[in-house]
Image (cartoon, rainbow over all chains, first blue to last red; front, side, top):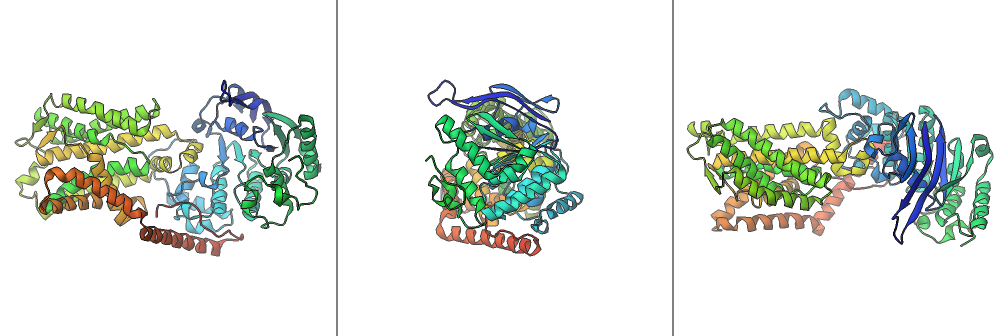
Length: 302
Length: 319
């Protein structure tokens, strides 16, 4: 379905800030695969997603969707097959338009937009049915401006908007990271259900190892622009957060650099705690204070 | 007074164009100053060459669209900053407009037949009936714009100004939306220019100077007072804002200010309309209203939700 062949991308090439973001990444995602991607900050996870979505054009390599070479297509052309949910809940919908208008925009993803009315009675009915599946009650306020919704509601809506028009590939870029644990939990559940029900081929970047293990049938770990290792469905089912941490430590020992950043550690620790306990502020930056309470996780190497 | 309302209604078409770029596309387009003159100049030339006044009006509309197209291409294809692209087109158009007018700075249409001639001959110009007829014409333009903004294409244009990243991810070429929007906007501006030239009986090379400020004054004034809750309300507010602006000018002139002070008055009006919303009282009121609207939505949504839904309010709204 999705094939990434030896893709490379260097930012600020030829300057002191030169940074290799993707250093020869190859990945084949089969129809129906749900691949979770983990790795430290700067490992190239987001760059990988952005080259697939078209916001970044790779320096070299090839990206194909089915039989189509889409390597150099701009984002709006790739939208015909590829759909995505952003990390920031504010990015996935248009705040001054209503819920139904946002749904109408999403429904015509990758198709021509003519002078037919955006929201018709028939379409409204369809949107209602779709929104019902979120179980958030949004179907009762179709006319409300999206800017009046909470972050969690907006992210759930973004997810529905990205998926209900049946994309061939779904990209999720840490789409629960900006939400507090309880809301993140909801959106994760909705993600799991939607991807399963619609058999979507999915690539999901996450900081949360527990989430990376629980969701999907494959897991890849990236570091410094490469894919370091991959777990298939069976290995993934048997793996635990502790196993992943051990892999990270091995890597750390080999490279002498921390392969995991604080955010990942805290994210891991957080998911082990009861939902709702840690505040959003605690994980925003550096200090590993909130992370040490979780069993089996000690933020060493800092 | 009546003349002020009539002018306000014709200028309202220009203000609707400014609304489309400034509010819908979130693009400060300065082309307006000269695309207005382009509309007037081309319409005047068509009429002076014996063309029908209706054809002249259509030509003014098309001339405006061309002006907008140039700014749009400079911005989207040549990647020139939007403000600068508008300034460049505006500057170049000054020369082009002079050429269009055959090298003359002023074209008189006083004895020519215009779209307003039937009105004048029936003795309706300057009467309430005349105002009502103009109002119907302007409302037709407004309804066409409303209708467009609610179509699939129009929703994509609205989202382009609101959240370009999101709309690209749904397959919309935001450059193309900007080109379309700038053409449509300046076409309305050119149409307004063509009508003003016919209404006042002349086209002048300087008639468009400061037009963007007039347009902004109408949009900001009108929407500040009448709101922007939906597109239908927002465009109506623009028309009322344009009429209100003309009435303020009329009153200012009657109070003894010189016609040459008008640009100063326009600029001061825009400054006031931009500063007022920053005052604490207004902000608190607006926040209060947004919060209430959000709470109403949340209460409704939560009562129907089967999941425990998160409370709280996010983001901005245009309410």
